[in-house]
Length: 48
Image: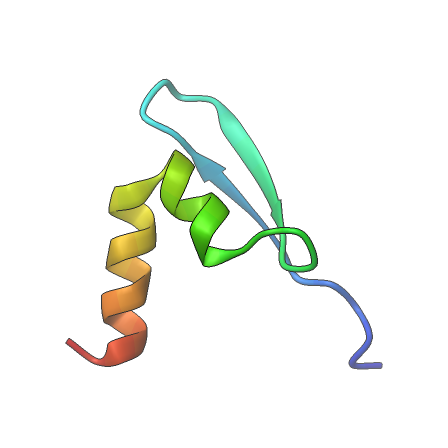
């Protein structure tokens, strides 16, 4: 337990689903594909 990788599915503005794996997804790569989503997540974590 505790060794599983977290995954998520995100839809871009074209409606395509992207499979995100925390082991290979960074804020930088996410920011390149979905800046709005990355920014909103960043601000949520910052508590704004």
